[in-house]
Image 1 (cartoon, helix red, strand yellow):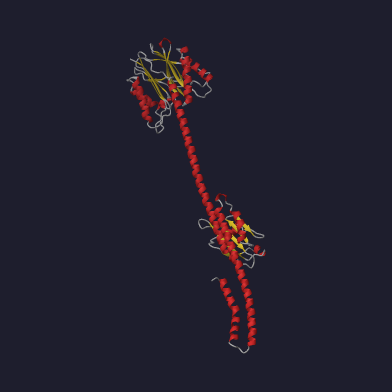
Image 2 (tube, rainbow, N blue to C red):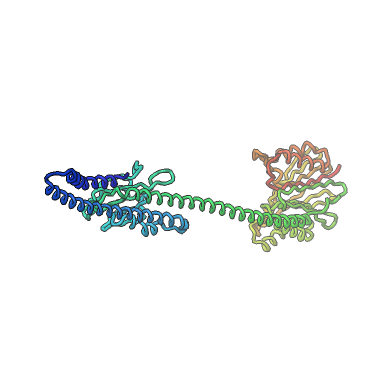
Length: 488
């Protein structure tokens, strides 16, 4: 039985007690029946008045119960709308605006999420509590509590006590709260049940929204990752297709470039000739050539373009073609042939590339070798009669740098047993895994250790020594060797 029901029963008993006493007195035959009649009449009147009071109290109880039923239905409608409203389109403040006034009629209400988001507010002359006050109220708050109300609200006719209900998040932490004031004379604690229900619904809705946001973020991340993976795969496929295309083009270009090199080494009576070219890439910047000249002479060319890749390969093709073009016009003057090629290179090309060239004209019958060293690595001339080694140093600058310059030539007489070793810097500047150079000293040592052998063996020994020295380190430059020896 509720406390209100007990009060009604007690009041009803008190009101009927005089009437019951008068009736007993009248029945037992009191001599003073007149007094009993008056007493009975007074008791009847008092009982009637009490009945009216009882009816009024019952009416108030009925209205209070109806109000509670209405508030419960309002909470149910809010819960239904929160569940029915799509979370991604939900508007919690609008829902609270529709339902909260019916829950706390004529009250002072503030619903806030920390730190400073006011979801709903009502009350004449409403003044926000402020973030600091909210943090103070919600610190270590586990359930609804009554606290002193705002003085400003009391001045407007609200009670001096306020009810604070915490709104909890997923981790049972207070993420906000509900602040309630009732008009003076009404107990704000009667709103505790509705306040707790509303706080629970708001907390549940916020958790649902948070879960939805997390799910959408996860889905978006997965979608983004999938799109990225698809784009990456498409890009990889496009790159592979482009790589295959470039590889095919380079393979074709390599075959075309190979046609610029002599198909075979010429055979010269009384002489040995060997040559090798190990490109560092698909396209080579090094080149060599054998040019047939009048009167049985032969031009020997070894050259190195100062770059790598497709650009140097094209520059190599241009340089090789121009040297071949002007060589017959200057069949005993290699410096003039290179001078003419230099002028034409500067006319036909705006590139900043250049090429170092060693161009020698050999008269096989006499053994006379006339040469022009245009900035190239000096070849080694080994004497067959024990005369040691000498270098054929530079007599001009590289082709493709300056138009006006002095082009000079040099001459040597190759005797039986002499060996001429021509090379590019890819030999001496080959690097091992420690980034040390192969160097001229190693090249000379390998050559001198095999002077008594044929040029083919010397060539093989030098190339093997270079490759063994490099080991697993990458080859950075083309390796080109040309050897010429006069037989004994």
